[in-house]
Image: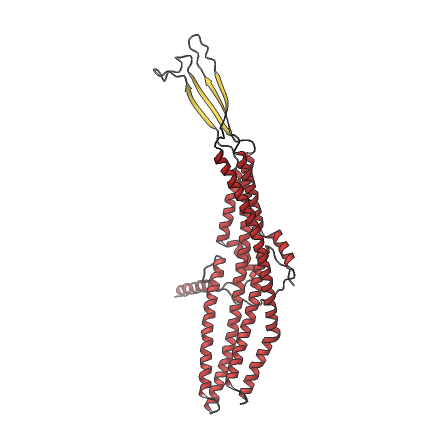
Length: 421
């Protein structure tokens, strides 16, 4: 019996461990975790390592060719190699050598491609960090809205009991009781919607962190507005210095330049160096001196149309890379301007809610309830003021969350953390 009790205790402990939520962590902790375990980021890193390995072998010589043969053998006696004085056994080696400068340009182009892949990994890290932060702040907005809704439901329950008691003594209308029940049902519907939204956000965040999608994320709290201190010109300068995608495109520009120079060198021939050693046996009075052959051969680059097409291709690639770089710079400038405007709007909205609208809405709700309790107010004013206060609180937390999400997007846009105040 004691054995079974011990087994049951172990099972219960394991079940408790499996369903326990993840310990509370800051958003920075989650970003670090995502950068360490996210599978998409690991795939990008493997791609960079692949290009790095390719760059180490770019521009290498082709393997030399070994030749074994018989020179001037007799057809009527093919296996007798010492019957005729002209017969010799031959061993040779040859090596193809590209025209001067081609190998260095191939290495340079491959090195630029590997460098671009490295900066693309850094760009992916920025995107991943922004996605984690966005999920975190969305969870904050949902959690705060849920807390506000729970408090509003509790207050409404108190109001329902008060109205029912007033109705029991004939001092309230049945319509008031029914209206409170309808509003209570609407709030329950809102709570179900918020719970569904939270589960979806949890699953998305857990996917970024390479966790099981049903891992419980603790409630998010303690988020505050952080204002940006830099103007657009300073932000654009930071983006030019730090944004990885700009460095990746610059590296590809170097690759296109090297490929263009390599295409120009295709108009020059490649060489093949060869050496052969012929071993001869003595026959009769012929001492059978050994002999050798040495040669150099090269291709004739007469297929000019193909080579001109290669030059045109590399030039088009260079122009494409330059325009992609210009387009990305323009997009960064536009994004910075848009995010600055949104950040300023949400910061002012949050301040307006916190310092003006929220206190006013709370005072209006309390005043309407006090008047109704004293028999001097309408019940509809009580409900309307409470719903207004609920919506104002939700809008305030939404403004805070959106401000912080836009701040995360701005940091991803410039590629560096922002100095804040």
